[in-house]
Image (cartoon, rainbow, N blue to C red; front, side, top):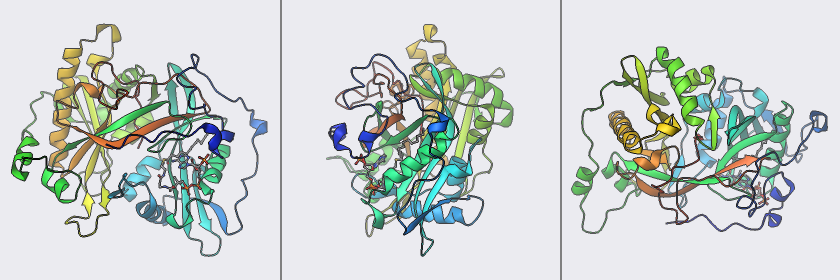
Amino acid sequence: MNKPAAPKDKSQHKFWKTQPVPEYDEVSKVKESGPIEHKMLEDVRKTPYELHKDFKWCEIDLDGPELNELHDLLNQNYVEDIDSTLRFAYSHAFLRWALHPPGWKPEWLLGVRASESNRLVAFIAATPTTLIVRGETIKSVEINFLCIHKKLRSKRLAPLLIKEITRRVNLHDIWQALHTSGTIIPTPVSTCRYYHRPLNWTKLYSVGFSSLPPGSTVAKMEVAYSLPTSIAVEGFRPFAPQDVDQVHQHLNSYLARFDLSIQFSREEIVHFFVPDAEDSDDRVVWSYVIENDSNITEFVSFYKLPSTVLVKDAPDDEVNASYSFYSFSTAAINESEIDRNELQTRLKGLFTAALIESKRKGFDVFNAMSLHDNSLFLEELKFGPGDGFLNYYVFNYRTPKIHGGITDDHELDKNSRSGVGVVML
Ligand SMILES: CCCCCCCCCCCCCC(=O)SCCNC(=O)CCNC(=O)[C@H](O)C(C)(C)COP(=O)(O)OP(=O)(O)OC[C@H]1O[C@@H](n2cnc3c(N)ncnc32)[C@H](O)[C@@H]1OP(=O)(O)O
C-alpha cells in the first residue's frame, strides 16, 4: 500500500509558503475556524499576472471547438494513478457537465496557450459552490482540472495559474476555495481513501488493476464478486424531474451533518442529477431514488469516468469506471434519532441496487470514498481499499482537522463516520 508521502515543512514550499493556507502542524492544534487573511476588493489586482512572452492567457469556450482542445490536453496530460498504469479519460459531455454548472463564469475556465503555435498547454477551472465548514456557510469555489502539458512541467507555471485564478475569483468577492489532490501540499483539512468494488473482475485482472490472491482462480473471483441480477429494494427507481424538490431538501439536510460539505441550489440539483441523455456513450450521470408512499427515503447517484490503460500490450485500452456521487438516506438526517443498524441496512440495500445498475450499464468497477456514511457498507459490499488517497483543502481558511473516515493506519474507520460530505469530481 502506498501511504501518503510525509510532508515537507511549509517554509520549504516556495510558492505555498506565500499563500494564506495553514502550517502543517496547525490543523491538529487550532481550535477555532475562520479565514486566514482578510482582503478587500480594492486590494485585488485589476490586471492579469504576467506570463513569459512565449505564453498567453485564454478563456476556454466549451460550446465550440475549444472543448476538444481541453479534452485532448486533459486526456493526454491529466491525473495518472500512482504507478502510471491508468489516466483519467474525461468525455466531452463530462467536461461540459462539470464545468458549466449554474453560475459558471467564462473567465474562470482559464487556459494558457503557446504564443506562437496557439496550442493549449495548461488549464485550471473554478466553479461556484456554497461551502459549509462546521456549520459556517461560505460563498466559495471549487478548483479543479489544474493541468500542465507534460513538456512544460517543473517550470513554476502552476503557481501562476493558481494566482491568476485566485485573482479572478477574488474579483467576485469570493475569498475561499475548496480543492483536492492526491499530493500533499500545505495543508490538508482531511484525507479520504478510495475504495473499489469490482463489477467485471476478469477485465480488471487482465489490465493489471486487480491481482489474483494466492490459491484463488479467475472463476472463483468472478463468483466472489457476482451480484444479484434483480434489485430487491422496493420503490427503487430512476430519479425523475418531479423528485427534484424532495431530493433537494433531503440532500441538503443530509449534507449539513458533515463538517466539510456543500449545499445545493435547486438549479444545481437539476444540473447535476437530472440526466440530459438516455443511456448512450455520452451519458455522464445516473441517479435513483427509493420511494415509499410518495415519500423519497433514499437517493443515490454515480457518474461515469473511464480511465485509459497505459500499460503496453494490455488487452483493453480503457477501464470503464463509475464513481459514487451524492447520496442520502433519510434514516441519517435526524441526528438524535439515528439507529445505526437501520441506516446500515438501508444503505446496503441502496448501494447494492446502485452496483447492480452500474453493472447493467457495462461498468467494470464502482469507486467510492471513505466519506459520507460509506464506512457502514463498503466492506460488506466487497469494496477493497485502493492505493489512492484524496486530500481535501480549503484555501484561506483554518479549521481543526476533519475526520476522513479512515484511522491513523489508513484503514476504514467503522466506529466513527467521516466528517467529509463533499464529493469532488
Ligand atoms: C479564493 C480563490 C482561490 C483559488 C485558488 C485555490 C488554490 C487552488 C490550488 C490548485 C488546486 C488544483 C486542484 C487540482 O486540479 S488537483 C489535480 C492536479 N493535476 C494533476 O495532477 C495533473 C498532472 N499534473 C500536472 O499537470 C502538473 O504536475 C501540475 C499542474 C499539478 C503541477 O505543475 P508542475 O508539476 O509543472 O509544477 P510547477 O513547477 O508548475 O509548480 C510547482 C508548485 O506547484 C505546486 N503544486 C503541484 N501540484 C499541485 C496541486 N495539485 N495543487 C496545488 N499545488 C500544486 C507544488 O507544490 C509547487 O509549489 P511549492 O511546493 O514549491 O510551494
